[in-house]
Length: 311
Ligand code: PMV
Image (cartoon, rainbow, N blue to C red; front, side):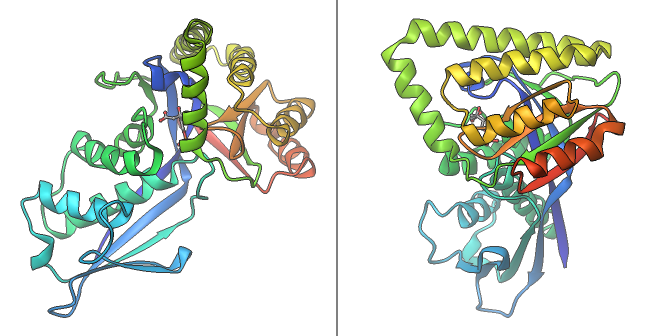
């Protein structure tokens, strides 16, 4: 039996604008994880993927071409030069990462599959190759993904991401704390990305200007994180959130959590990921964790994760 694991992730700055070539910053969230377990199966049984969390069993031989989990298995085996028809395997997936919430559940499950399968077959791939296989799966989930999720999850480190560029090493000078709170509403990234695209097509000049400003915020945030100027991040989060509102991807439920976190003392807060639901993040001091968590829960958060970034 072989296991592969992958952490969740959260986008700190730059979502949506990153699809249009601007920089974004994302970090792994190790508090939530996806695990894939691979075992040899009886001869003739083929490859079966068991996902008890969602009550599904998928047969790789008969799954539609665009079913993301079997696609990931086929793609990984093709990269290793192995035919899925020749293998009898049982894959079991377990994940504590909430789906459709902006925490990278789809990319993490796919990464766990790639890691488990390649380890089981004795051919581990490097991070770049894992990331590129998962990017193909992300296209099925999200349509036109920027590639930030597969990159941060496969590389397991904070990333300053610009589409199409190699990832740049990026150090967190002083670790800092964030609270991540879930509205409980699904964040349908494929739809929010498509809506932003339609709006951009109607008024490119205005949207390009917003994306430029989001990119400038992400650049300023990178400098602050690298130099350990954590106090500067709060205002940058607020600025990023103002721009996300103009992209029309916020929601009253997200705004309510943002306001509650700020009232409880957070230095800044914004939505994270595709928006229209999913999670928000707040920059906090560790001693504020209990108060911010309580305020977020009172304001309707379905789940709150408090985590240290860059530890
Ligand atoms: O909702 P998430 O966490 O998968 O993030 C989506 C981020 C976007 O910038 C909106 C889309 C993308 O592909 O980068």
